[in-house]
Length: 390
Ligand code: GCO
Image (tube, rainbow, N blue to C red; front, side):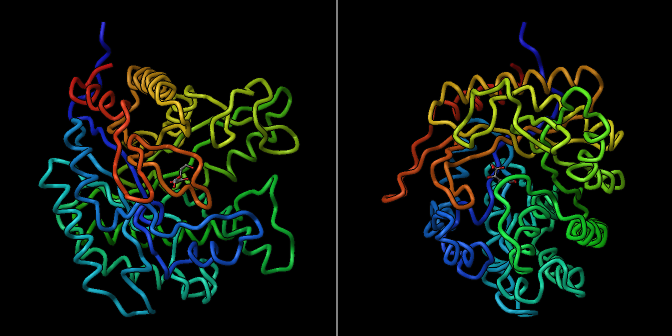
């Protein structure tokens, strides 16, 4: 018996500007790529040139039978210097929204996906006294192009932003980069929460969109005896970011794997040596755990799965992983959890933040010619979407 998904379910794929556009010369990641070669960081360069090829990318998605596309707009293009906004770039992103709508793809638009303008970083990034004000000024300008957009995400994975920027802060303070055991910097986290609390109602009022943010969920499970430590880590890594979502129109769940919490903190599950190209355990059951935990914290706020996927060169494994994850999603729905969307990470093989090897895409890209090569998993996901059943 096929298992069916809720009515009007959104089926799509997700991307982020810096990972696919190419030549985001003016953001902090571009800067990092060009200063952190010693850590083996690779360049985004032209990425997969989706800045110019977004129409082709959306066509592939829509023709496969999917009905939604999550993408981000790039702050550093829109506000190349403080308070100076580029009408041309705003118009570019408006064209993307119009293109998606024309193709029957519901756009899910992210305002901040990991990158900020270099000048914002030089001013102290999220710890600057005026960070919230400066971010709000950008968001106000972005609202002008969001007319008719139904779903807007303010900040992608604030909990991971708090890890990454916490590292930058450590380095600035003369401490070493922490390869193991890095945790979210709670002070940066508080600044991100403050920003979200200001801009979410503003976007809601200006555009009528449903507004929320998307939280990385690691399906954290306690090692025997480490329950108290687990509760602390759960708060620091996820719950402090989920709690503000109780006031929102939706929350995004982003799930890839499960991790364990011991007295030493977050560690990989020892019993899962079966790794992916990210070095993460193969745990498609993580999505069900993530949905249940998120629901327990946010209550009746609707949930969108805004990212879920696997880095693998074996496309059959991608289908197997996604099938198992979707069964976990259906179990959660059967238990009364309000899940409205499944947006697969990712539409395209892309720049995985310093690395090109982990391929998450439903579509492969030849990085010399930029030719797109859809993988069988794209057609498969399209069939599931069209049937709205598994
Ligand atoms: C993330 C991201 C993506 C990553 C993906 C795989 O939010 O971490 O939104 O940018 O590429 O999660 O690591």
